[in-house]
Length: 534
Image 1 (cartoon, rainbow, N blue to C red):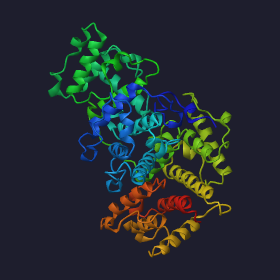
Image 2: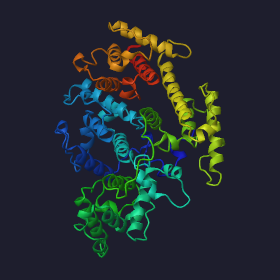
Image 3: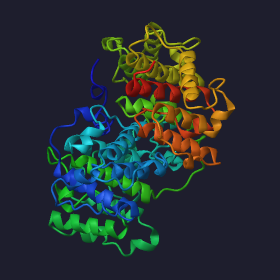
């Protein structure tokens, strides 16, 4: 199978370096400085990080040293996607000599990063502990990127419909990546200002500072606009560096001068420095702070926890382009085809698949791809009864989510079988339930009638199961009357002890039987790893 990056355009691969396995073994000083600046701005007031922040960007390696105990990464993940990690699970003052506590934090950070959609191929706790710079920096960028771009979509900002071009539909707009939406957003404000320049990239187009100067003037709140250095004043300066300084002076006044320096502006297209991603981050932060567009009523229901779970799992597998919206991003069939080829390498004959679509034939090409999805899923004995290629291409919600679950379930079951050397053939859901009840009995806890057992809603059975897999992981004092709080500590602790759990606390509280099964399966896999039981 081709690498995931071969299936995407430069910006669709998200600068994402979604697979840190492809990261170079050298790091960009500009990236290090920018990420340190952002982390300091974002987290410096957190009292738990008083010994970690601020980081001095001029001290070589200090960023990686401060990440070694896992605390900073856990905090960064929660800043990117709030409540991903229950803070009660974090060892906040791990003694540097207590390798066990440090490893718990690092394991929690890595598994939690995966749960929000980071691809952690070749990134483990030991890489962070040993300061593998290219891997740690790549992981940090993925976390920052998810935090910055996660809400830049028509789904979350219905006012973005104003960016539609003639003859486009809302569906066309939804197919755009956050990068493309940001470029259109910048150009919308340039057009409103009467500026004929257009931004087509995050490099060469911004070296003269005119686009940034105009954008900041347009998006600044009305009461602050008069305090900014005017565009005419900036562009009258002959020194490119001085222009860039004035642009960032304006950005600082708006509390938005993150990620870039004057040098990053005038050398935006310098090869090998990866400054494009810094400008992407700068513009994304501007959008999040000052979208500067008229509000519009919400277009549709927000993403469900089920959709969020499948999306994050897909992204953690390293697919490209990055999945943001299941209702639109899966219609081409390419994401499903990549997942099928990951489940069973060599399954997909990529010479039969259309990867770059002809606008005139796009519907038919996507339909053909989706038909192949159903064909290959059948080949792998994945349940696709009543599913057609047209259902996937048109985005039938129920059937698309059904296939997404089947693929995730197959992945988890395959992982279980690979770890359970004593078991021949496939494992069933009944096997998982039997294992869970055997474990619960061993710690004196009540057995479960099934994955729909109402007691699961309290979170306590999952806590008991975690303690059965790894003793004393959850103290009884952590059990509360609040069901969701218990489910949060259960999910975070499962990740902390090494389980690759993708489900969310809400799945346990609401007793979603499919997702409860995946939690138990992930704990069963961990049990095989830690205890060698079957």
